[in-house]
Image (cartoon, rainbow, N blue to C red; front, side, top):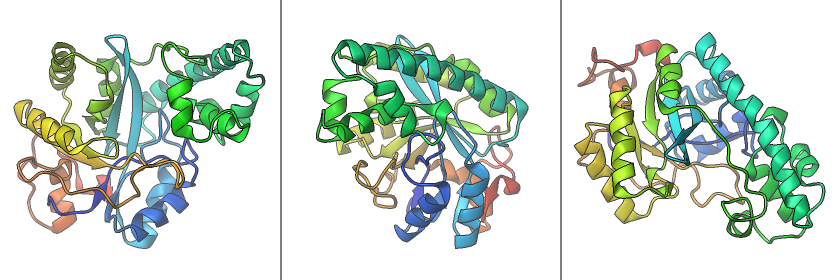
Length: 303
């Protein structure tokens, strides 16, 4: 199961990716991915298209989403998998988050205008296929398009982060609230790219402890933004907190993402993959955790 080429973290035009769910599915399959999940930010509108495209390619698919959460003054991302995308509780909760994004984006535009960059909100909005999900990525693409920066990576070093023009804090969902949405829809949750958060060891321990207490099941160990020492660290933390290990590129766009779909290294052998929950469906073998909380029914994943 460790050798399965799974990519459980990617984004489409339904949030801040540059490819449609169908194009993304094809790119994942061409890259060797055999278990895939589309995890758009606070949005599940692309799930049916993603599932249909994966099925047409013969690629296993599990529903996904990346939920924005506020924890200890930072934005933390929680991945949800294997849920019903039409569940009212999840759909309504995500709609509330998207409504807050619009106000935040307008304030980001005003902040950039004060720094001499006019029309940033309108420009970002024009680059966002889903107007409810105007994000920092769309602002970054606008700044590159207008010649203020040479790349999206440069934008995020000069703008849009705390202490820089364009930064606007936002209150997202609570950790327990986000996990309730995922669980009510029949899914399981994992912490996304934990090395990206600027937490002290004490606060990080509190995040993992609270996440586990709310029924969280996994943590992204191998991902596009983790260096080898960070992979090792979070493999150890997965063992310490009895969490399953996830793997995902966090792919957004061919010319922006550091890690192509399908190119991640394997998970460390000492951890148990998150997809072991679905082993019976994937391989025909009984999952070691089948029947436990969070073990998914066969129809939660498309083969």
